[in-house]
Every structure is written in C-alpha cells, then in structure tokens.
Image (cartoon, rainbow, N blue to C red; front, side, top):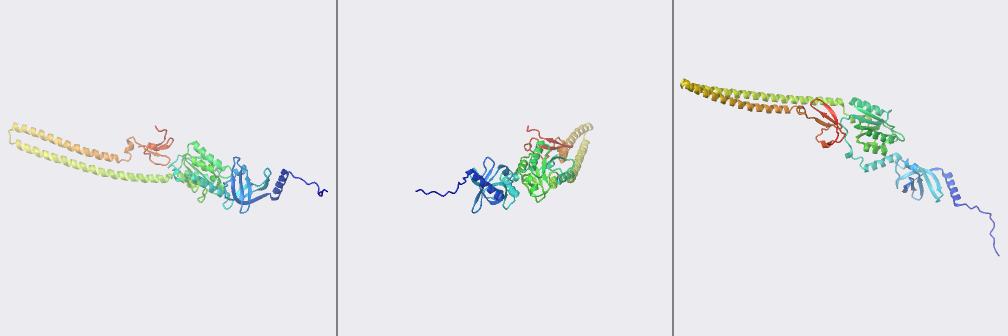
Length: 428
C-alpha cells in the first residue's frame, strides 16, 4: 500500500538570477543612500582604477567598492587602518551574490578631508627632500624683470604692482593671470609657472593670492603646483594668503612671504634706501681719500725740505773747499796758482755735480714711490687701467671666478666711467 503526499499546489521556483535581482532591489529600496562608519582594511587598487576595500568594526565587516571616476576626485589617499565615513548604496553583486557598499564619497573621521590630504602630501614631498633648505636658491639682488602668477582682479596684484613701483620704479613686470580658486585653478597655476620659465625673460617669480579659507587656498596645496615650483628654472616666492596661512607651495618655494606685499618687498631692494647707503659710502670714501692725500702731501713737503737742506749743505761744503783752494793758490806763482785753481775747481765742480745728482736721484726715487702709493690708493685707479668690476645681477655678489658662472646668467659690469649689463654666452 502506498502513501501519497497531500497536494499543496505547484511551488514557484526562482532562478538564482531572479532571486539575486530581487534581493538587490529590496536592499536598494530599503536602505537607499546610507553613511557607514568603519575602519578600512584589505585595500586594493587594480589596474582598472577602481578601489576595493573592506569596512569593518569590532564585530562585522562589509565589502565596498569605489569606481575609478569617484576615486580620482578623492582629495586624500585611502590607506589601510584609516577610520572613515563612507557614503553609498547597499546592493548585491549578482554575479557572485556578494553584498557590497557602492561608495560615492568618503570622509575621514577626525581631520577633514582637505586637511588630511594636506598632511599626506606634505609628508610625502618632505620625504622626497623637496622642503630641504639646501635645495632653496637665493633671490637675485636686483632683478630686471619680475614674473607674477595671480588673478588679475584680486587685491594681490594691486599690492604687488604698487610695492614694486614704489621700491624700484621702471623694473619689468610680466603678469601671467590665472584663477586662484575653484576646480582647475591648480592646473592653471602650474601651467603659468611653466610659461614664465619658457618665456625666459624673468629673473624671479611671485606666486600667490590674498587670504581665504582652506578650500579657497586649496589650489596652492595641489601636487601639480608643488612640482611646477620645484621644476622652475628661476627662484619662486610663494605669497599665499595672510601671515597665518601655510600651503604646500610655501614649503617647496625658494622663499615664503607672509603676504603679496611682503613678496614684492622681498624680490626688489628699495632704491631710495640704496641711494642713501651709496651716498653715505661715497662720503666715507671721499673723507678717507682726502685724509690719505693730505698725509702724502705732508710727506712730500718733508722730503722737499730735507732735499733742500741737503743741497744747501753740499753747497756750503763746496764753497768752503773753494775758499781753501783759493788760499793755497795764493802761495803759488800766478800761472801755477791759476792751473791748480782750475784743476781743484774742476774737481770740486765734478764732486758737487755728482753729489747733487746722487741726492736728486735718491729723492726722486722716494718721490716716485710716494706718488705710486698715492696713486694706488685712488678708488678708480685700477678701473682707469682698463679693469672692470663684475657682479651677478641676481644676487649682487662680485664674481672672482669664471667657474661660478653659467650660460645665460646676467651680469653687471662697472668701468672707470659708467656701467653696463652683459649675459654669459659660453664657457670658452
């Protein structure tokens, strides 16, 4: 005898795909967009550009994926162990039946996203040695042309131009206008720095803008701007924000100015102050030269008096000798006395002439030496002999060794009368 099961109707049989799709729809409809906090682990970045990781807490874990387009816009770098808050939609990946969080935004817990990105990039560039003092270059003493990278409509360009015009009227200024905030501003700033270097006519570059929030100043914290400053052929001064603001550009630049006005003061000397200093230095030089000339004149006067006294003494001795000869001749016959007198007179005359010539030669040698020393003390004597003073245009230091010079470097030459500029053409 057979036992039959009771009839319960025909059950609905789901395919795996149907069930997976319904579970996915239920999850997405039930939760929608959610924020999930946890610790990142198992972070992976395959060649596709997508980012895969796991969010976990003390008891559970959840797979997460961030697609390439979203990952490229993330301002900071995801790392294992970071505590974050991820926003996305909970769904099922039907191909494997995996529950996943599809992430479209991530924020760090504690530090803000931009602040974390700032700290990460700062640490990475510092490890490369880009902040090291030994790679920073000195600013030129008196640049012929100053490059400026900033916005045309901001207060920064006005402050820079006014300060440059007041301190060094007539100096060349080449402005490369850019946007200084917003999406794409960092790329514009980096391109502007490269353009001014390619132009080749500037001696120093000011990169900056006025103050603002961290978001406003963010283009100056982008890696592309930092790399462009490092690659710059000419020195770069960073002048971003106010004195309390610091950006990555400040750390990699050759010099950091607290404000755009301070940057302009830093790159050019004050012509009025230099004129005052030069006037004072010339006055000291004139007083020193006058004092030395007076001392040499006193020395010459003394030599002349001693020479006159020596000649007078020789003349007195010669007269005494003549008188003695005359007395001796008085005792001889007239003709003989006359012959002896002539001989003695001729001998005395020769001795006197030789003596005076010797004295004159010695005094003339002393006078020539004194005159030579006096002439060597003249500040322009060396230049009058065809020499010139050469110093670097960018830092004002005198050039004593041709090996210090590089092709294309600008020089200033001072001659006995006037000065000019030159450019190093080659090594031969």
